[in-house]
Length: 395
Image (tube, rainbow, N blue to C red; front, side):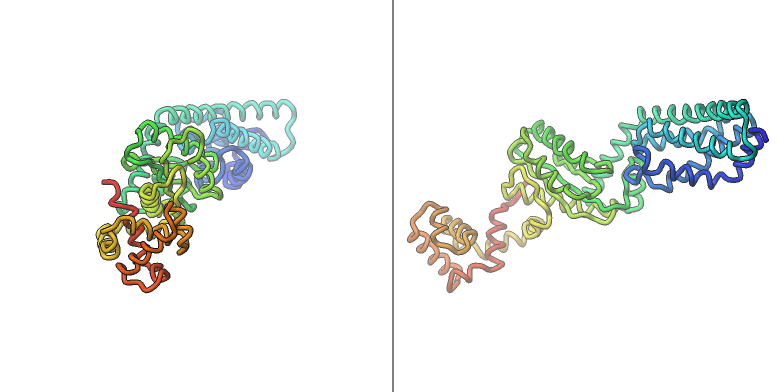
């Protein structure tokens, strides 16, 4: 039984061979894992390429341009997904080894001369397939890098912009840049006060982004909204801690804040996390946070006040107007509540005598119509003080 006959027999076993090759490379080669591609994506291209190799061997010729199409398509796809080119080459050699074993085992044992012929023909076909893949890979990497970055930037901008989006469309675009869309994603927003130099902000944002990337197995999508950098990434353990460490690295300028949104089940729903990250950032900036991470769940009351400025203003007017005749009363009330209703601690923090605090508290109770200090611990007072502290915000 010669090479032609053996190859023709294996053409009827292409699906089985494809499954065996898939098992040999999946999660065994760099990039051949769920962080870069879906296993179905890999399975769809394995069988056509094995068929092309066996067909060429069965007819004792090199692959035709049409048969090289799937090989070129494989190279283009792996380039987009960021799979190392060395891993692409290794996958072809894995196919070569698999076919050599199966061709040798099909039919009677081969002598030295037929085996050498078989090995040489198979190696020649494999080399042509590799060349088609790597050429397409390099062309794609050189021409598409900027385009893919723009796709990622536009995707984040749309997610952060609040416009209604079709999750399926979002996830299809994400797959183009090698992002696993079906896993939980969350967002972070990085910004500083308006007075901060733009160059300092840009450098700080890059530092935080570089610190985050090693923690994640999937690509970080980076975009912007105004001067704020918005990152969207697959959630992973320790992300918040990594961001917190990055925010305090040497060289990070004062005033940097990272707002962190809550995870969503998949990328197509991450727009809500983007909005949470942006509002958490805004709350942190208004509260004077410095080189820290502000998770959304910790500033929900502040976000409510920020997103409802009219109600917040009416609340502060209704509660605090009686105290504005003497600004120190508002500050005393704020410190007194933060001190756990301790007159002594309040006096220490304000650097005044205990009797001064007691006098001010009597005035506060009188003006607010409260019978005792305990009655000052109520939602409208606490929210009014927080709204007054947050201020009108940035235009």
